[in-house]
Amino acid sequence: MDIKLNYIEKGTGEPLILLHGNGENYEYFTHQLEYFPKKYHVIALDTRGHGKSERGSKPFTIRQFADDLYDFMNEKGIEKAHILGFSDGGNIAMCFALKYPEKVNRLILNGANLNGNGVKAHIQLPIIFGFTAAGIFRHKNPKALKNYEMLGLMVNDPNVKKEELHKLKMPVLVIAGSKDMIKTSHTRLIAQSIPDSRLILMNGDHFIANKMHEEFNAHVEGFLNK
Image (cartoon, rainbow, N blue to C red; front, side, top):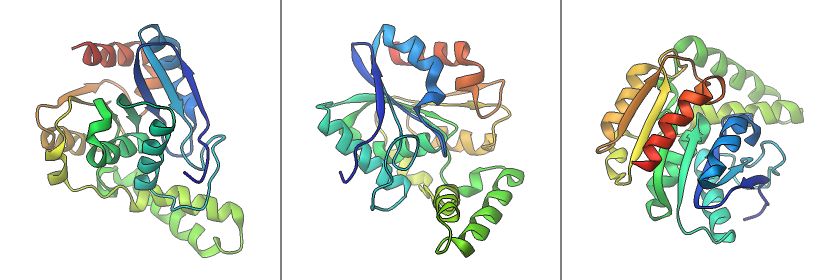
C-alpha cells in the first residue's frame, strides 16, 4: 500500500472492522466503539483521503478503498473479519466481499447502494450538480479537487450489478432506515439479490448507527451471534 491508514482498535476476540461513510472518519462509530469491544476486537479505519489517512497517489475509488482494506488486513495479520460498512463504507464492504470473500466472516451493509440511482433524487441531484461544478475548477483549486473526488464516489461508484450479489455466500445483514436517503426499494433489491441475507428496516434516517445506536447495535449483535 502506498499509504498508512489511520485507525483505532479496541477489545479482543474476533475482528470486527468498521468502515465509515463519505467525507467522515472513524469517529462516526463512537457508540459502536464503546459497545462492541466487550466481545470483539474492533478496528475502525479512516478511509484513504478521509480523516487522518493520507490521500496517496492511487485512484480515489470505492474499489481502491476495498484493495486498501485487503492490504491493511494482511499488514495486521488479520485472516478474516466481520465487516460493518456504513453508506460509502457499506459500498466498500460490498466490493471487498465480492473480490475477497475469503476474508469476510459476516457482512453488515448499512445504507449501501449499488449505484447513484439507488439514492433518492432530491439528495442525488445536488450531488451531481456539485460534482459537475467542482470538476470545472478541480485543476486550479485544491479544495475543488477534493470536493470533486469526494462527490465522485457518490456519482460514479460503486456501480455493482445486482447479479454480482448472487456470489456472496457469507451471512449478510442489510440494514437501513425507513426514511433513509437510499430508496427503500433499492435496499430491498440488495437484500433480495444476496442469497439468504437478512433485511432490517429501522424507523429512522440514514444515520441510524449514530442516532439510534442502542437498537442498531442490538440488531448487529444479534446477527453476529446467530
